[in-house]
Image 1 (spheres, rainbow, N blue to C red):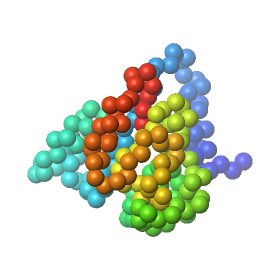
Image 2 (image 1 turned 135 degrees about the vertical axis):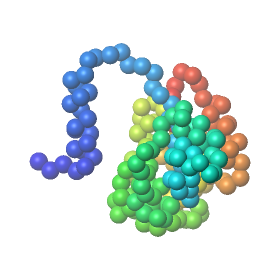
Image 3 (image 1 turned 30 degrees about the horizontal axis):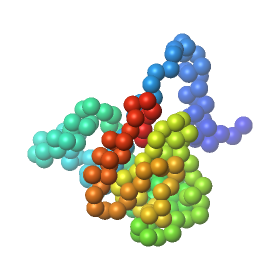
Image 4 (image 1 turned 180 degrees about the vertical axis):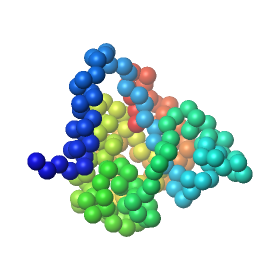
Length: 172
């Protein structure tokens, strides 16, 4: 039986889940993914830099989860972003190079399952604020009920999305 990496990893995670003691499910955690482009891993203080002050990034890192070992698949932002959101390589998801905001999306990408799709299927209210650059930027995609890709007002729009959340359901 041949397995791809996803099937193998998901299968290997199943055994501890099956053998673990049954516990009542807790509340689903909220997920807030902040992606900062064009910033080296050596820049933020939370990764050891003593010369450049990054208090807000450091506070987020202290209160949340941060990547200790991460890399991008390609130096171009669009395919790297698509790989982050899908877990698949550029030759699989179809975004091979940087796409302008008004560019058409490769037909294959519309059928990809993104992190937004997976979380929405679990009851999450998904939103996206920022630089999409994976085609059709002006159109909400992949189960994102809140969508803002214009370069101005991103911080206010992100705050608007967070403020509209209910305590009874998780958001992403």
